[in-house]
Length: 103
Image (cartoon, rainbow, N blue to C red; front, top):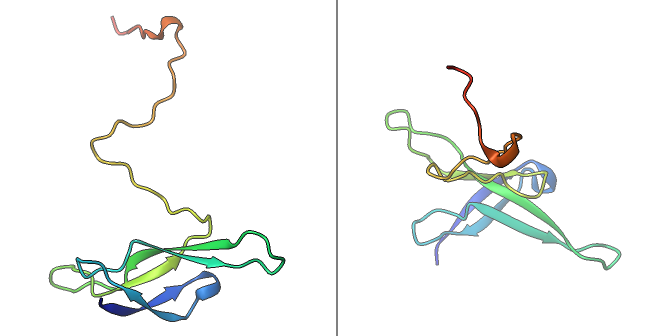
């Protein structure tokens, strides 16, 4: 398998470069999780890094490599599919019906 030296930014791994295995498409994984053991013997803390483009080519705007940025919340933000319905709040009107007052 191929690997690529990938830099890490932010968090405890800031400034380090690690070899990361590439997938079948030649890209590193979108998330990189690093379990850190607890000194007291408890459950390990998991550091989460997300993949972002390192730079872009001028002409086509293609990524010229990848780097990982620290995700302090621990869970990366997930994008919703474009065709999925937006999360809506329940209707406040009785029976769930809305009445138009336009006329």
